[in-house]
Image 1: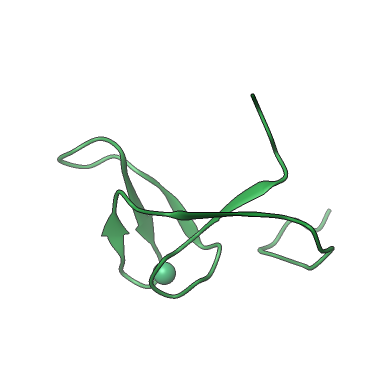
Image 2 (image 1 turned 45 degrees about the vertical axis):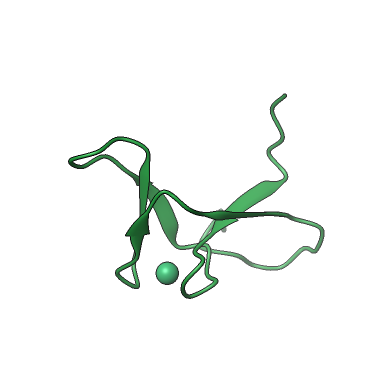
Length: 56
Ligand SMILES: [Zn+2]
C-alpha cells in the first residue's frame, strides 16, 4: 500500500526535515538537527499546513 498522505518526522525535533540516509548502515535516517537513526515517526497529513518547502 502506498500512502502519500504520510510524512516522516524526526523523533528528536519533531520536524519533517528528516531524510533517508545511507551511511555505514543502510536504513538510517538523518535530520538537519543532527539526529541519525533508524527510528522515524510517521504521521498522516490531515491538515493543509505548509510543511517544508513544496510551494510551486
Ligand atoms: Zn530533527
